[in-house]
Image (cartoon, rainbow, N blue to C red):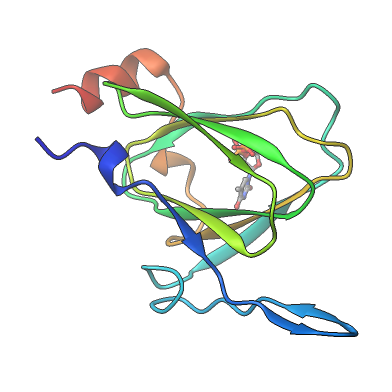
Length: 137
Ligand code: TYD
């Protein structure tokens, strides 16, 4: 059976290097397998913070550690996996119905998130019990 975890993958993003610095361009439908409808970024992250702690009904996302590092603990209701992000030219694609927790943020981390849909609180599953019920049925 195909599980949501099978669709999770890291994406190698392009790097345009020059002696004066690097550029990583990202376009929806190209490097990222959806049309990008929203971006947001996490910064000023408190030491020891846990972020996330939810899943989404339909939203797909790509997480990038554009500065610093953190770990993403993933759970599709059947298995658990942890991915460390610590490079600006690597994205982590998360399909719908993946429970995620972001932990172990290095000081000064900036996490960029590319999202397939506008913000909508109704898109969140914030109860782990509700998530398990949906994800395992
Ligand atoms: P949330 O997605 O729960 O943060 P994280 O997963 O990083 O822990 O969002 C935290 C709060 O910010 C929540 O009250 C909703 C608000 N928010 C918006 O208004 N728009 C957005 O695009 C996002 C991502 C969050």
